[in-house]
Length: 295
Image (tube, rainbow, N blue to C red; front, side):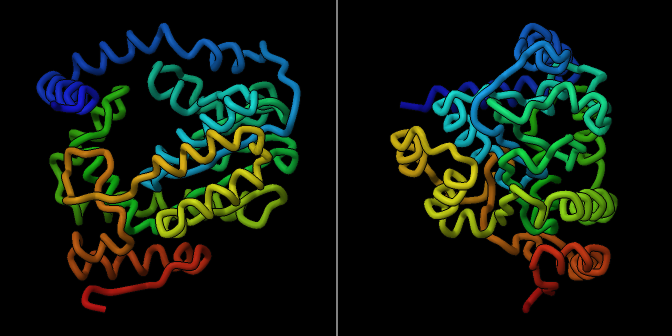
């Protein structure tokens, strides 16, 4: 018997590929009725209290979806309010996304107690940041770029017009050209993560490669760091259900190769060299080696 979830995903992908503009319109209409908590919180209409709030930062294709779901379950089980502003702005088509970098807005929308915020895709200026329990998850940016290309081109949900334009661009471009065109975005955002978060008070930095190598240990570190210790049964279930195995790479799947160094298999040697040069500072700051094909 086929998995109902997988069947629905295939149908959704087929609709998305055959009628992309209509899919975007339907998606935004549907999402306009959701995100009630985010809408109220962004307007400053909630006043949560309780234990310290948790912030979860990650970047595109860093394995954030799985860890974000796990953190959401843990946060709800520990009586935190879950607020996902980045997804709200992306899926509901709000113009407020640009205001996430404005401290005047984040001071109203973020609270140091009683909430879980994630996934945050940039190092936003959140006041009193040291009072939060923060987790930052990042991956080798070269592998991220490769995975990001396939995701945008084949499987990423078309939540808005920008997603559609990005897909058109990726479909019209080879992977090497696309990676070169977008490596500067990664360089700037990774440097910003390092400047604002790595080594800052209350921040736990986790590398994706460490997470897939020993997920149980990383989860235990995160639970202890965030204070989400009140639901051990939920923690154990998350550990039992964790699965990072990919039998064969499928470009239509949201979860593809999880092994480090995938960029060496997918990119031309000269592209890898250019990535190493452009991202040299980032690779050094986050502990990644500058490798070449065949090494």
